[in-house]
Every structure is written in structure tokens, then in C-alpha cells.
Length: 169
Length: 160
Image (cartoon, rainbow over the protein chains, first blue to last red):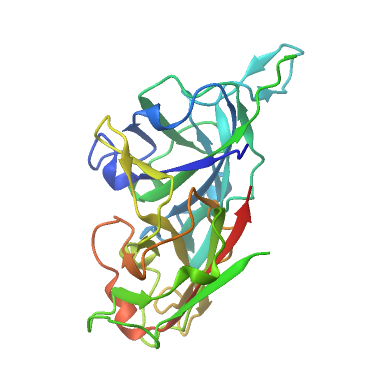
């Protein structure tokens, strides 16, 4: 039996809220096209537009990459930290900087991740939601609006590859 | 055994002067009946005029193809299942700068690993492939295509 795959394209221009802060956008979708009874490996690719704000990715250095979170879909990524507790994090992966312009005042460019940059995330079932929230965060874990990142647009493509359910788990 | 289909900006069936849309003819008889995984790579010529990719609307281009039956969907402001012809993105790559912060020369490019593979439940059947290029908003034609050439390669791998 062939295990199929499906892609979902999310363009920030098409989110539920036009304009405004792109660091947290919501998208609506009906997941009825994904067959139930399978697990899925989810991967993604990401490309943002260039920011017009010179130095947007060099001041501060924590702007060099972003963390993408999707709380509705990611629930089996675990965080290691300062305690031995067992807690999950909705981190889908990270996107990195591609520089397009340099000047004495800093570096500007866009951010991207290829399909193979981040490891796949296993979903135990077809997503049971009609809403996808895409959060973009700095490494410090805080949203930022000071350097223009909140004004860049992006295309995020999620890929769902079917995996046979493991009956023993 | 996999199959490769190459489309060039200088060998096409029809294309308007804006070059934001190209039509290509193809006969798929050489493809066996099967399901396929398709990936793409794309490379453009260098842009002759600057600035190029410092402008947000030129940062990357969305590529869509009519004539392939994919399992690609879009999410947005409507709670419905919507299919899309979008097959991937070619991003701008900085090549040279005559003056800091002023001029950026580059190309549009993507490798087979940049965009997710696309599942085709059937071998393609349409004899016409229409390739369209859009700005990041996915709606406005990418008018910069009028001054650059490209090679778009599709890789088809049969799967059982």
C-alpha cells in the first residue's frame, strides 16, 4: 500500500488577519483531506520577504534566527532545561538568516528553512483542529517588533507524510 | 527509475511579453502508470538591473503549475479544503553589491531539497503545463521575470 503525502501552503497575506503583527498569525483549514488512521511525519519549509529595516538581523544578535511554534499541531517535542521535569514545547523548528544587504549600520535580509533543515515531527493522528497558529519568536523567547521583523511576510509550507500506525505503542 | 522534465525560458509554447506565465507542451506517454513523488529545482539568470532582492516584493517568487494533479492545499481565512497549484518557492540569492546598502544583484534559485516533495496520485495527463510566477503575496505576477531567463526542472520518482 502506498503511503501518501500532503502539503499545506500558508501565505501570511492569506491569514485570518490582514496586516498587523506577523509574529503570530492564524490560518483556517479543514483537515478532512488527510486520511484518518495514520500517523504523520510533519516537516516544513519557510521563506520570508526581505525586511526594509537595515540592521534588522544584526541588532541584537538574537535576531539572527527565529523559532517557529505551532501550538495546535506540535505536542511531542520535549524541552531540556534547568530542571529534570518532563515538559513539551510547541517548537516546530528554526529558520535562519540569508543576508541580502550589508552596510555600516548592519545587515538585512530574509529568513528561511529548507525542507530538510529541521527533523520531522511525528503526529500520532490526523490533526484535530481547524486553526493553525504560527508564532515566530526570537531565541530569547520574546516577540520583537523593534527591527521590522514583524512587518515581513512569509510562506510556510507544511508537509504531512503518512506513516503506518505502530499498534504496539 | 526516475524521470526528469526540463522547461526553459527560451523554449516554450506560449508566453506573454510579461513572461510571468509560460505554457509548455509535453507528451507523457514515456511515463509508466504509477504514483509519483515530484521535486523541483530552479535557477534563473542574473538580474541586469538593481536593486533586486532588497525590495520585499522581489524577495522570492512563488511558482505554480497548472496541469499536475497534486495533493497540495492552502490554509488561510476560510475554513475549507482548498487545493492550490503552488509547487514551491525560488528564493533570491545575493550575488554582488556595487555599493553597500544600495545595489544587490542576484538570481532566483531553489534545489530539490528546499521545497517539500509533492505527491502525485496519478501520472500527469495534461499535455499542457502552465507555469506561473507570483510575488510573495501569491497573487501579483512576478514581473521581474520579463528580464531574466530560467531553467525549471521537475523530477518524477515512481512509487508503489
